[in-house]
Image 1 (spheres, helix red, strand yellow):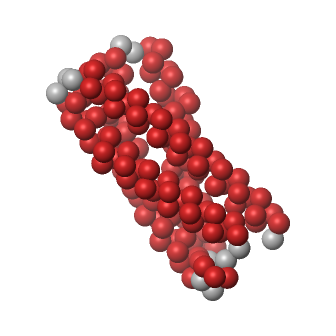
Image 2: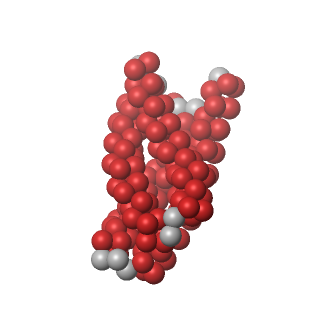
Length: 151
């Protein structure tokens, strides 16, 4: 059970930590130092790499999370913080799916075709959705930490 909890935690750290870094560190630095075409190319390359990690992390989170719920006797026997974690985690995955398929794929195509205006508009949507997912991720981690501390 400890191994599954560790894998679950590491996957959450990769995803939420990556969003924190990208949104609050990388993006502002790119805004300060790069012209729009170079910034958009950089962010396209960053997203491509980061989203591969997120797909893996999301898969690991789902598998380990559902397995841990099973080990604890099913969702009916799970503590309230587990229910909140499951709901917010599924919401985060749905938002990520939308970001990837409805935003990132067209963003990347616009960057490849050097359509900077269109890519920039989509990047604005991605930024807002990543911010939402970051907040959800931080709140989820907080709820779980408090819930586990209560026993």
